[in-house]
Length: 182
Ligand SMILES: CC(C)(COP(=O)(O)OP(=O)(O)OC[C@H]1O[C@@H](n2cnc3c(N)ncnc32)[C@H](O)[C@@H]1OP(=O)(O)O)[C@@H](O)C(=O)NCCC(=O)NCCS
Image (tube, rainbow, N blue to C red; front, side, top):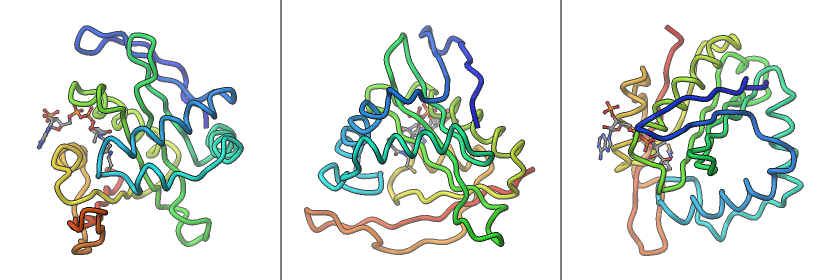
């Protein structure tokens, strides 16, 4: 699915939201390596991002071309700031009503409302696409993300204690959150 380009202002900055272009695969891969290194709240360590630019290209093409997947990229004053995306949780027919959601911004673009803006746009598209539920996992301690999701209608529905063990020996929970289409 293609997100129709949108331009707006947020906190005095110019925002552009749009779907990815095929020539941005390499940039998206570099972004993934950077953001996973900036926070302990994403799915893996930076050195574990082993996708190739070809994998990334397939990923973005499938999101643009599919009827039930979408990626929205955000640019702030012309610079790439991060993205959010949804896809089916699994390809099994019995799971077709469940969308899996992900979002990550570069650290320098966090904290001024861009995450909320992106999530609002994404959830509207998820609802329009016919999904009944949106799901995500948030790492315990990621209070900003938890607050954001809760304020958008997600509810905590399970927690795996110490699901994440970091290289420094510390742990963090995985919290499962679900939003039912209003
Ligand atoms: C999580 C993330 C997407 C949120 O986006 P953001 O643009 O930084 O967040 P926003 O500025 O839109 O703020 C979201 C809300 O959290 C609130 N908030 C900020 N810091 C907070 C904290 N420490 N505790 C609780 N709430 C907090 C904000 O006040 C805002 O709420 P409000 O709109 O009701 O005032 C973004 O920070 C990010 O990409 N982080 C790194 C990767 C990540 O953690 N991804 C999510 C994985 S589940």
